[in-house]
Amino acid sequence: MSSATTARRVQGAQVLAVAGVVVRNPALLPDAIRVGRTMAPERWWARPPFLPLPDAAYWHFRMVTVLGHEGAGTLSAEQIAGYLRWCREMRLRRD
Image 1 (tube, rainbow, N blue to C red):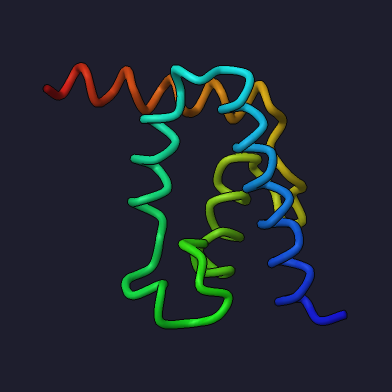
Image 2: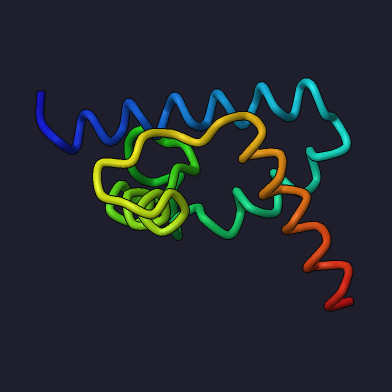
């Protein structure tokens, strides 16, 4: 399995984890949508897999910067919820 395929599978698992966080915390849905919109590549609808998933290299970079080391795994539900809450707080401070 190529590293790109592995990265896409990890990314897909992470998207499902975000969905699970939002199901358990519906108030975070607007924040998850905002974050998703900022991470989605331009014209995502024109390229397979026709989903607004970030570029695999960008996703890898973000995971390394968030978790602090190469080969970092995935974020926990608590980390995802905390990040979405932080995004909300930063947006509210800015507005």
